[in-house]
Image (cartoon, rainbow, N blue to C red; front, side):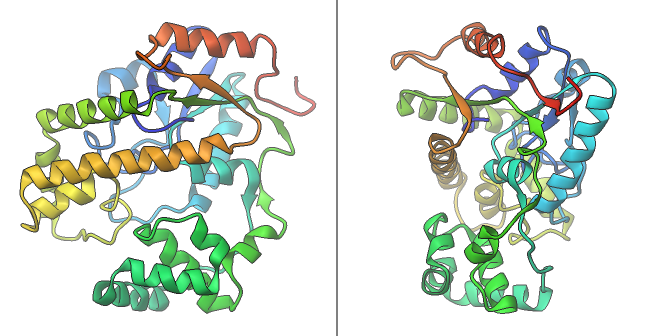
Length: 317
């Protein structure tokens, strides 16, 4: 686990040289086909050498939930384990990791009528207005969200309208489907010491994405005609900002600036999650002055693995 641009993929691939692992993607953008450059998806050559499961499994039109990920990840983990290898999950979608470890509380199915009503209200008054409403009915959930975190605000208000109970209360009840009570799992969190170095990497990577054709990638999605800005795929960081440029709502320079800022904000949220993450071994990715090489980061992980149990199902090793 780690914030965006922290070197998770490089580390995961390097670990394949030392352990019999198979990689499972835990990135909510990389699950979508056609979201390649902007999601920093490994290229075809890398995927051929180090296959990643749960990449390119959905169309951008689809809505992919944490429950979907839980079912897919558990299936892939079981398949990898049955073949005698170790599942290695890599990505920055913290909610997916949390769901995998803890399971899901019993939640109501989506109500598309309520969702459309909430989207219409957001279009009229903005998501921060609905966030204020959420603060009134479910302050615990609101505290964990950003006022513009539209998808989660929508879901929390939807749950409250359906059940009359705050989502935080439902989540506090017994969860089902989690792994942490049945498996031994080693968790690594890649953590930056100097936030400025991470911001520099984010800017450099976003600039590289633009040079690789990120704008053309989003333009192709825009021209499909069946996609819209409220879909989770299009709301992904970077895609939303370039989409606004394609729609004529801002200049390209403005979209790039907003994309970099949004990516920094994403990294900040990811770091906040990880600083409070239970049972995770924090791995430094820099010394405050410069970023460590992949070899140094790998060495930190291997030293920990020599002293701790690796993933295994209880009773099987």
